[in-house]
View 1 (cartoon, rainbow, N blue to C red):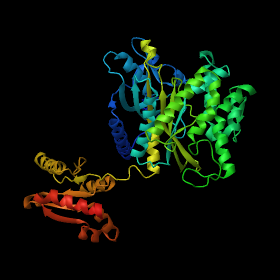
View 2: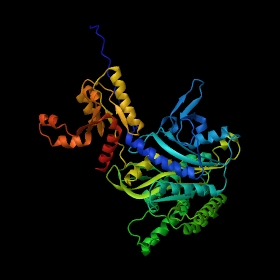
View 3: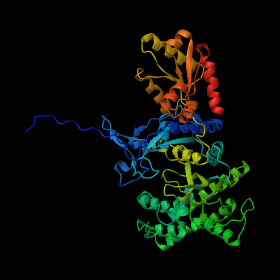
View 4: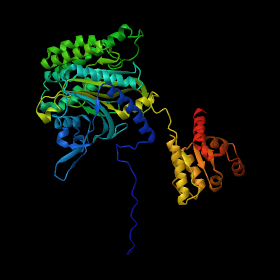
Length: 530
């Protein structure tokens, strides 16, 4: 038997499922977008705050029931004091903890915004990641519906600040009190019915995709899709299903009626083709009138409809019509901590998905009122409302519209190295620093300087627009060589032999070292304009 030691196996480089590396282009595009969002929030008088990625698990609460995943949808670990901590799954629950912990120092109403990564221990899939960025704004300590109206207005203003035109987006608004009142009316109130209630709400949330009949199936025994997969339903009886569908079908019936009569839209254009409940904003006042019948179910429904009516009227007076912010009874919002108005930003233009299908882009953010979240810590009512933008999804939308990442960042000018002694390296560093101080992006080659050809190949792969070359002869004469890498690539393509290439020295010329900054700036401008 051989005593030879086994060679250790090489570690395989691999990304965890549901996570992604980010390129320089994506990072710059995100920074550009976030800067525009931040400018709107600042204009509204909101201030930044930051909370850590980890919170104690009990502080986060159980708002992400995902029974087939460990830790019920969050990533958790036990600290050395045996307390459980979890990576935050959103930015709202940590804010509630922050407010409760600093309630005596914070001036209410507390108006703040936050940007950061959130983590969900869910099954990953196409476009579904376990880590993603959110950008939130919240008002804590304001009980009036005017705070909710302001949130919807700020969402609309944010969409337009990002270059999304009116008609390409709508902010859809509903009230969870109405939904919760409907749940009570069919006997699904209380904590013991939380699971079935969530199934019903998820079914309603699929109305725009499945239509009324598809939702009816999910409210009953379940639904089998085209692939044969079966989704278990909520198990409601016919009476319960009728009560639920009556709540939202007035909007669908109204739109279908417009289709049958061939009526025109707001701009006088005929409405044609298949229109789902969210294809165009409905007529808010009509929907409010029809929803008034739901108020008879119970007090909670009546209160929610009064709040919706007040919010809608305030928006109209403030100049935000239904083509920007619309009442939509089908807006659910998934988390269980919402207690009042809820809103969702939806983009109305079409895109091609990963299957090659043309689909509506859909939601890029949303939020609502969560009056009970801070109370979990303080025992006192602390009203709060806010919304969250899905940064990655919104960035994808803006790229589809050509509104983001269109300006290419120029790669740095490369200062090559011809001599490797300490004094020479210092001179190359000084030359590089002179360009940087002039506001020109520049770097000195840091690899093996003895193989000069590798330096130019590096400049080529890096996309450097210019290479600066100074050997001992040039230095003695006070000169430098400037190699136009862009023009050089064009000229080199037309030269057939290596001898001719070396003789031509394509795209390369000599200047006085004292003129380096001015000549580099001039050449960069010519490359940009050419």
